[in-house]
Length: 182
Image (cartoon, rainbow, N blue to C red; front, side, top):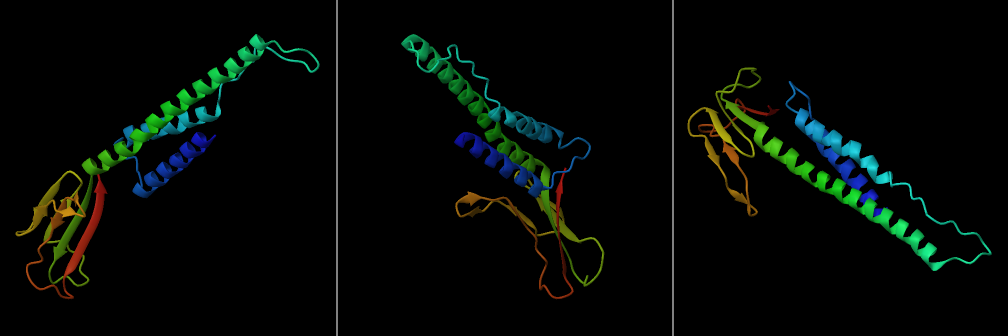
């Protein structure tokens, strides 16, 4: 029962992660991920669907129980318990791959865009300098002196985009930021 509770908790956590990523199905790009998630969620009820145990012998009060018959009943219960453990292990193995699938998709297909424009207080013009960064890539869109680096932050390599605003930053500068997943 504890494994069932743990797995249901993990399913809830994964659903929250997906909601946080604001998954949107767009021209089928999210479909492989959604299929994996749906498969995992549809398989979860198997945890509560333990096989029906049919005991080979029924005992009646006031009669002697034969040890072979009692052992046969215990063996039927042990077999069902082992089958249930195998079903739980298979589901746990499938669920453990899901966070990796989400991370790999985001690292490959989601970009953080960062831009800047001088003398643009309140304007709606496009940035004159911009770039984008993902877990797997960094691109300088336009503008000189911008950088793509992979510094170690607390011992973890993080891909970063550095935007150079070409001098003093004042109230007429406008900074842009956006997130897009392809």
